[in-house]
Length: 546
Image (cartoon, rainbow, N blue to C red; front, side, top):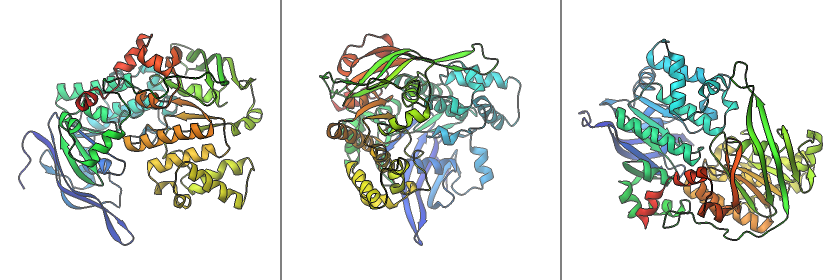
């Protein structure tokens, strides 16, 4: 077959991929045909399970071992790589095709320093260790917006925030200077300012070096702002493609219209659709009083200590949501860890319903764990893969010896019903559920002890727009029905506007602004808050739909 046109780096023709199941092949990709031009930015959007990541895996040769390409071609620079040996695929990875995977905790080696992992990618790309490789590592860290690159290079992945880990993955992908960069949800864990900086950098690479970009995202705002062409997928098929202006102003398919309708709520003028315009004064349930937290840095660092939090004071009120936003590394997760008793503050007090809890031992804090619970960020990493959903949901009840036998069965069904999780899911294991179902199961587990306060750590960042909207609606419904309070950590300001009563803006461990959500979003006083608002993607999406 003739090679693709000179202006196309990649052509996929009639691609079909299937997985064996119950003695037959279950096709997950159906006759997919697409092209990626040299220097083009192509965004693929669609619900979870629509086939977006399967296309990426096929391109870079990282499909599951039991996946079968049953038909079609994958042409890269004119070469069909659909069935080439693994040795040839390895030669393409890094130098021709780079990948930024979605989950940094899976993509990074927890036992290896960050700088060394980037150096290994540079050595792999160049074939040997070269002089100046340490300087190249620091240069890549700076390119992707890592502060204090010398320190971060010496640290391990667990010592960084989720957003920083994501940037390490991007640096590794850029190490080989690839012709095509596949970015699979590359900014799902990043706040608006860092997201903008990274996407600006990727845009610069496309323009300066002629790199092609395949952007897989559930964020329609990112797709609208950062692509030359958008491709919409549903159930393994391409249902629509075209320029962002055409796709978002006049969607032809029902799938595209559903995605747009489920996107985080931006008003017609590009502002935020705030749910709680008036915030009643209810009793305080949790407060931070001038809390500071310092961490000791490795030997050889310029400073002896790192201030994760500095003089942080705020209150969470009963039955309301306090949202905390700020760039990666600003101290959001440290606030959660201190509030949950997992870290002790270096200075200051944490008070829960009038009782100081910051100096408690683990034994003293344990009874409070029935009243405060955590919903973690990654639904795929939050549940034990060996346990059924039933076992995971009732685990807190078993741990505190609050129920057994038939009582556990009744409790599990009641909790599943509260979060609108089908009872049939209770007998399954996490790998058998979708991301949205897993997040519902995690929320059900967090509600098992009937807590007064839930800490929500990026609860929808790993979910596509339609599933995210359903989870946010569920959280709103639960708060109204149960009266539970939330502390929501998020980088998604549109989602925050949809659920929060109060907003706290954090930067480098310091509060730069806080107040009622409507007031802060409509009339921000801090230059940093204004920068956050201006960096939110999706303005083009709003103006096109208007």
